[in-house]
Image (cartoon, rainbow, N blue to C red; front, side, top):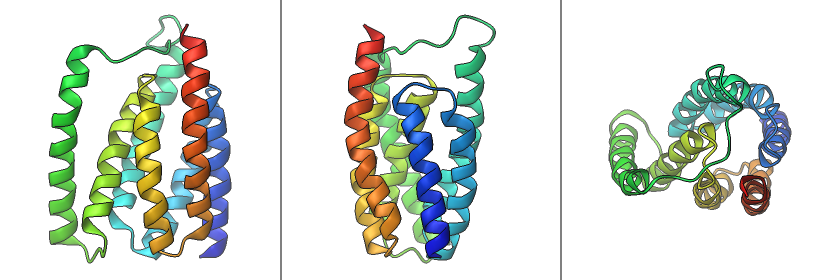
Length: 183
């Protein structure tokens, strides 16, 4: 399991580096990381995170398409959420959390129901914001990364715990970089 942990960590780190720099290479490398991490999380019994990675896979293909072509328009620009979206996101978060918690409680033997439901809910929102190149994605990633550090330590996935710690710093750097690009 250590080799998968290390490989998934390295691929995820490289993908995130490209994401911080707003480079489209983030998507294909991220897809490779997702596949490795699905196998790792299955072995570790982190079930909601497997579902999250499958959704990431789909959203990564979508994000790759948007960042490359934006539907044959100009390249997708970094933007901020509208007020309407800012009001809608907490409602979406609550619905996601309740749904994921219910699925974990009734269909898995997860030992970290609340924590995993919280991390996955925030991560789904962060990934959607990332695909749309919304600057607020970095705040959501920061919160999700902090929660995932705890999960990875609890599950003894130490390489991934280090990765999520690095992600915290990268979320700050990413926000700063994207803010400069946005202006």
